Amino acid sequence: MALAGIALGGVAWAGLAPVGDEWREEVHVIPKGTWARRSAGEKFDVLPDEIHLTIGVRDVLVMKNHDDVPQMFGPVLMMPGQSFRLPFAVATRHDFACTAHVSGQLTVFVKPKPAWWELIGLRMAAFLNSGRWL
Image (tube, rainbow, N blue to C red; front, side, top):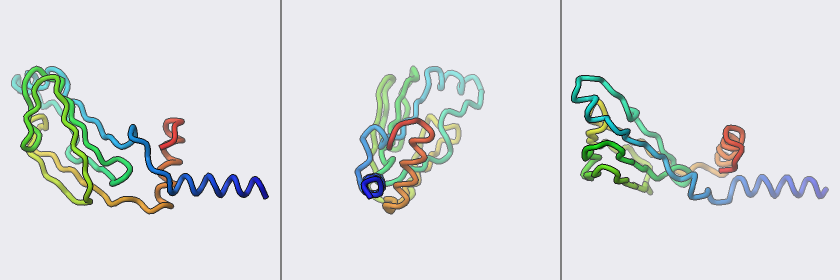
């Protein structure tokens, strides 16, 4: 009976506890030399065409400019060495102009907050992939 209570408590925690801050960020880095390689005619992909985020789980986009030149992301100018942190609170699609992307455009899809039973699955997947709980 006690074992069943412990298991039920674990399931309740996995479905209802908030996600730790370290799991909330989706980090993308613009590497040093991106502009130079593109200027030399190289098709150098540093960012995906689409970024998928989820409210309450991974809902903060972080862009880090390690390049030698400023980069634009939407209306934000990131100087070399700067980072930009953009939290999302609404599930929707966002299209951004982005000088670091080979096409000049980056789409961010933000999904709604998962139901408690979906959060259990996300926590289990994170644990199995990294050995750490979400």
